[in-house]
Image (cartoon, rainbow, N blue to C red):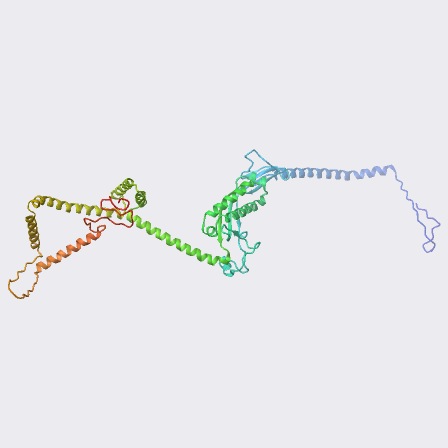
Length: 472
């Protein structure tokens, strides 16, 4: 029930307003409250069941999340990878067995634990560190050299270069392979993402040191030497940093002189290469000649000759005779010493022929010695008559009788066909003998010849090897 104050003006009145006041009074019986509670019970039950269901779902979700969290620590290690396990950042594992092996690796999930991996083998290339920067539109070295003038400088900070041992400049590009042999040491010192940069810096440092050890020519022409030195120096740097990295193949796959002088330097190198080819060809020809003359083991024959000359120079005749005996045994033996064996064999045959001829003459002279001592004039006349008889008995000899009359006599002679045929046959035999003599070393042996001259002092000997340089 509401009471209206009579002091409040009507709506049409313009008298000033005052604050209104109202009072509401609700009265209900005790049965109404009980009815309200009874009406609220189904709603409360539904809300409780919903809360209990939500709690169960939340528990299951939390359990699933815990399981997922725990299994998130499992990690697959691929072939070609290596790494370690860390627990709150500290490497764990039995001493010497900290590295993980390929396969599924269970471990604590992050951030409690972590499996840190990196490639076991990798490669790096240094393409710009020691390489000149080409001009715009230039892509090859030849084009860059053609576009570079002699007075174009090498720009520090822009053009990479090296200073060689002789003060020249050089440009190189490097490729290298490396293997992580000790992942524990590697990851204890470096983060995986900086390992390639560490290897690159070790190679840069080693290349600067290597270039300072070689001249420009040696650096460009020596194929393996600079690469081996670079690998050793870069590996020493990595070892000093305890990197656990082992360098494999290190290659200077491109090496050039400064672009301004490259063309001139190339011509010099070409001339040197041509000279090397000429020298190699000469050596091959010399080896072929030596093998042909002294056989495949010509080095041993040359060694004996050099020893012989050395002993003669020293004045040790006994030692020289011993070496000469050894050399003679080798040349006259059954082993193959090339054309020398054939020459020695012909010389021995000629010596035997001379000995046989001289032996017959010595026997004949010994038989005539007694008669000569008794009556030399008669023996000389007899030998003369024997010589005349032998000449006249020749089938090519012709006797002509001239009349013993005064005045001049004109005689016309004409040989018979038989005599002319015999003379032609004798001429053929004579030429054959001359040809055989030409094949004999040193020509025909002449009694009374003092020495055999061959090539140089020290090899000059007489027929008995008793006189000559160092023996007189």
